[in-house]
Image 1 (spheres, rainbow, N blue to C red):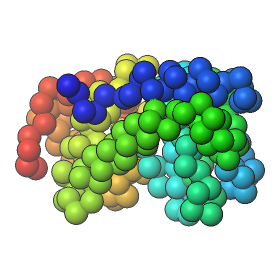
Image 2 (tube, one colour):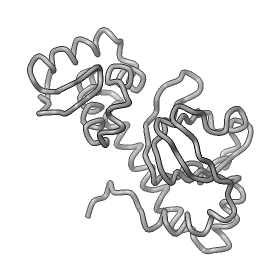
Image 3 (cartoon, rainbow, N blue to C red):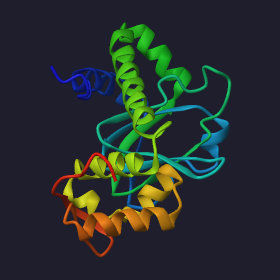
Length: 208
């Protein structure tokens, strides 16, 4: 059993029930979802196709790039604060959204709390994985983990996202250090890059 696999069945049941109550969206790449209203109101968003980035507003830290199927904001507003994140499409995206209070009301009516809890539990697990990769680790370990994550992306996404920019925005390691490590890995034939984009990883040494 893959404990890191998305709970697709739960997503599908939630999507099927909630879609009729939502507002659909179709966006091209590099567009912001919701705009300023996302800070004031609380929404649940279902990403049905495409990829988007989640950016922390206070310092523009790149929290993660996520791909469909994905749900954001099942518990939005429950702590009384806004999202404090900016969502930017990386590829064309489709999906729907609805007020988070309505989401929870519909979930209650349809007895779908188990599905919602499974999704939230999976999302929490993914954040724990991210913390293990980045918190308290040295610069090389953070760069290595981020490269391995990028290698798991599909080719289309890798061709759109610059390695240097992604690592620097996700880790806040200085650009000079990231550039030095990437140059050494390329020279040692550990990674293959083209025009600043990751093509493939041959293997990555555990230590720098």
